[in-house]
Structure formats: C-alpha cells, structure tokens
Image (cartoon, rainbow, N blue to C red; front, side, top):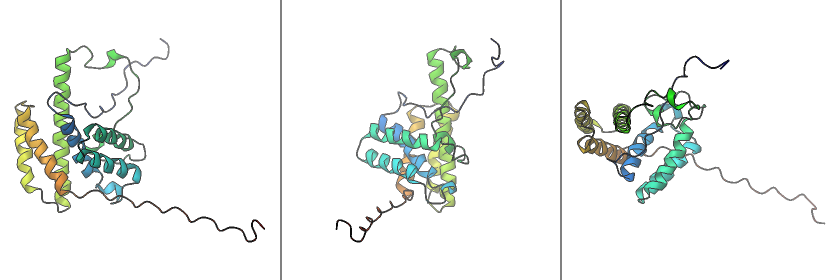
Length: 212
C-alpha cells in the first residue's frame, strides 16, 4: 500500500495492569494508591500539586478507607489520565508508569506478543507488573528517605520481595512483603498538599440608583 510504514511504530508504555487472580480489588488499589501518594510529593509539583491532581487522589484515599475499592480505582484512573497530560513531561521514572497513555491504533500482528498462548501472555504481564512494583518501591523508599521519613525498617520487605522475584516466585510470598511495604508507606507518608479552593468572588455592588 503506497505510503504505508515499513515498520511498526514504537510501542507506547503499557497502561497500569488490571487486577490479577492473586490480588483482590482492595490490594490492586493499594498497589496504585501508595506510589501515587509519593508521586504527588515529588519536586515536579513544588510541594503544591494542582487540584486536578490532588482532588482525585484525595477522593481515592477517602473511598479506599471507606471500603469502596471500585470507586477508589476509578479515581486513580482519573489521576492516571492527568499524569499522562503533555504538561507534565518531566514526571520521572518509574512514577511515569503510573500514567494511562493513549496508544495509537495498530494492527494486532504488530504486537510482539500477538502469537503467544494466553498463559504465556499472562505470565509476562505479571512479571512486568511485579518489576514495576519493585521499581516503584525502590524509588519511593529512596525519595522518602531523603525527605526524612523513617523507612529503613521497610527495606527488609523490599529485599524479601526482590528475593522471591529473582526466583520467579510471583505468588503470595512476593506480594505479602510488597503490600506490607505499601501499607507502611501509606501510613507514614503525609498526604500531599491540597491547594485551598478560592472563595467565590463577592457579588458586584448594585449600580447607584438602580431600580429607581
């Protein structure tokens, strides 16, 4: 076909993985919520993330605490879409992977995993998910350590999870320490600042003599 590309374009980053059989909806939210909390404290926001970012996160926290995992997940989807906006090009890795990119349409056969069996696709997806969680945990601990948050005792959870990942044991023996790490960070790390809402402007004074 004239004008057709000779090779497929570069694949866009994968969106946040959907829940696996090894995680409940609440666990899935926790594994997004905790690193998002750290992401909103990064220097890129200068300590004051915009309401478009802070509000969906705050609502996700409220719903998660109330036991509404589905509602919290929806709020995190809104936050992930905001992270993907072009105005935040300097969001660093691995927090950049919390975004939801909009991939360009492409034929299925351009997907390098198109011909794999379903089980193999799932295994690869789970491995990428675990690798991202480890990268987020490392970056979160490093950043929060620099902020003075007590995290030294949490490094043992990370090392335990890394050991299981190295042995390809991506089961509860891996996710147990990971979730303990995320729960502890969520408890110790302050909520990101939420900009105060501007008060509504006062009503305009009536013109002198109006209605006379």
